Length: 120
Image (tube, rainbow, N blue to C red; front, side, top):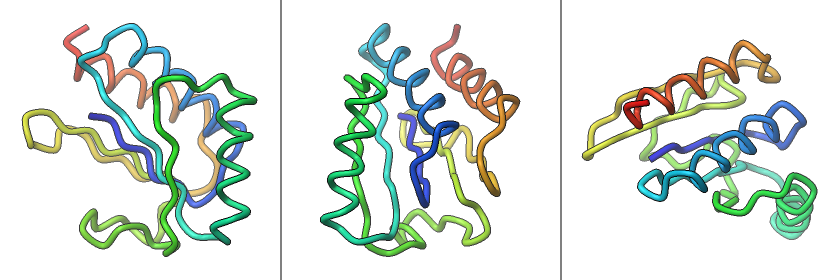
C-alpha cells in the first residue's frame, strides 16, 4: 500500500502520482490512494476531478480530508507538505515527509521505494 498525503495539488505531485498509477496498473497487488488535506470541499472535489483527468490517473483513488493536518490516526508531521507512507502486511515500511514542492530527486526516491516494496 502506498499512501500519499498532500496539502495541495501541484505538477510535481502529479508526476509522482502518475508514476505510482502506472505501477498499480502494472501490478494489481499494489494498492494506493492520495489524500489532499484542507480546503473547501466543493472546490477541492472539482480540483481532484480535474487533476485525475488532466493527468490520466486511472488506478489511484484521489480523496480529500477536511482538516489540513490530515487524519489524526496517521500522525502526519505538520511541517511536511507531502507525506508518503508505504506499508506491507500491516507494517510500515517507508514514511517520508517533504517540505515544499517535490523535487525530481524526491520523486525518484519514492518510486525506488515502491519498487523495493514490490521486490523489483
